Length: 330
Length: 292
Image (cartoon, rainbow over all chains, first blue to last red):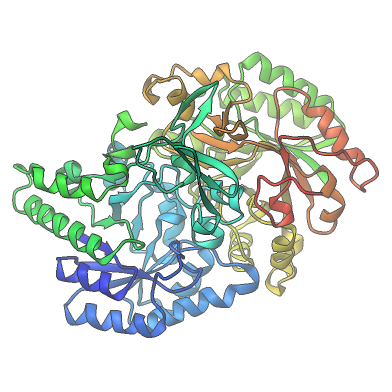
């Protein structure tokens, strides 16, 4: 079972490798990947440097080219594939069938993984994407453990699941809420609830967060004011005010590790290319220990308190959840 | 430009659905109707047999009928139900998840690609045309300019006669699908004990921001736009680009809106949008914006 860690920069990449990642995933410095944030990701030169470092340590580098190409800028996505291959990528993570088709035809020997942004949640969808020679599917965070299990038992393709980090509660690649509010979404711009549209305003003792003018939340004294990701705001339904879609919380599947291992899940993905090298180092260290433990003693695995403590301290709102993997969440 | 009626997105009692489609059958303005449950597999007021019966009645009244399939397919049972829709033997099928496409291709069924399947460029579009797609419902996020940019590419203009384009033009837009049921959550119920509570909300549940603006509509596992999308005044800009517009069924007044759209095809009878309506996506703006 592979530990796949995020790297938004060379220092984060080194932190991941030094702390036990089997592979890292990175993106290019443009809108071809779903974490298109200022100051993040690698240009062509850094990408080659990253590949070199990863390979010297006997590990793998995945490059995410997982947004959807714009008609007039198709060359950018093609260039991203060409550039990633030239830099030495071991794996391309792709969602758009245009990009998948291009990569499959042009570079048949470079492994292709189906990005979570392609939203493949069932055996039929996996069958559809097989025509592009994919070797692995990254599953959306909407499936329950029971559904992951059913899928693992019906397909012979490798499955990768999200193990830890920010929680998308909508089927990825099919959520247009961000462009509805701001004009930019993961699909069209590689960003959700983009920072350029965020405003904070102190109103007396109250702090209000807005996204393109829409009030996402209001915080009182002493309340932890989280980033206004639009699906994690407090809104009202029939005058009842609550987190209508989801609380600010992070996904943490440590306790599911034995089950994921038993079902032969090929890879555990840690979310967070936007995170600091220190964050990546701490998370990677915990998950390395946990995976080693489950592989040695799958029957006697238990989550160490210290792991939970570290992960909770690095989580959104200091809260974690099993998300959709657990039936009760739904 | 023709007018299509999308599938009913909300959970209505069977009698209401049947009465609705009896009215639809009498409309001369609608040329194509999409039928089926696309949101939640637990909604079983009508089964496939019921939809097929309605499909026959609509076809006899001169309409094209296309069966619309589930968007978020998770459990194996949902996949099996989807294949039954595909196996109907006489009607076209709208694939709202790519999972339906291998099956449809294998059985030689003409298919529509729904708006939740991501086609954002000519290369992807051409690949779907080559697979046998004959009808494309564009993603909401595509503006007039974006659609123009796709259709003018030589790889598309050479196959343009092989498919028709359809744009969602009226109704609350389905903007997201989740493993979680938000209507059940709004009633403090777990999803597996939802008791089909969404039948109480024939137009979903309205979500407001803390300053009182309507931001979303909850429709089971689907989150819709808070505003009602309305492109009635953009119809003249669609000529040559869009073959058909889609009207999404509302609990009241759907057929009146169909007639209003028909009357404004050339821009002769514009209607000012009201508060709570939007047209942003088509105009290359945030979807919630009301402009012009």
